[in-house]
Amino acid sequence: MASETPPLAAEDLALLERVASRVVELRLEVPAILTLESVRPLSFVASQAMIFFQPLVQALLRFNDYQRFAALAERRDALETLTTLIERRAGESQAARRAARSAPAKGATETSRGPGGRAGKTT
Image (cartoon, rainbow, N blue to C red; front, side, top):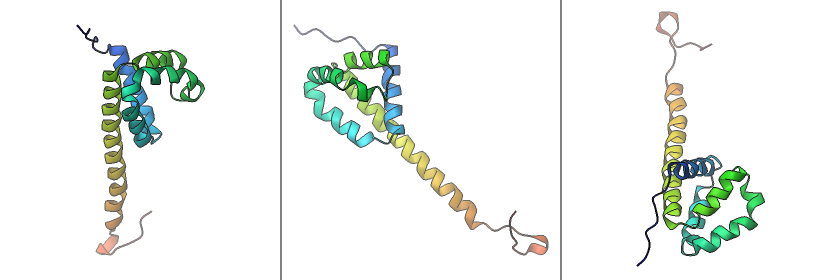
């Protein structure tokens, strides 16, 4: 019989949320998702490779979080959760950027009216 993996702990989910937020903040969604999808079959080997890449990844995570993340990388369900979180946050980020771009454009089309109803300069 195969043993079932326990569900992710709250601390693990919080860590995955922080990683997803940082990946989206750095706009590395596409490379991160491609990497996660490609290493899923080799998740154990990938988690061991993280030890090698520790100095680079510490730009994203603190040391304790990095160790926890390396352990999580062995679990396929954690990688799937991280991929989902990155995709969701990337969608939210893109929607926010679109809204920010369209908001000034709406205000720019309106002209202010001076005394007498004539268009005037805004101060």
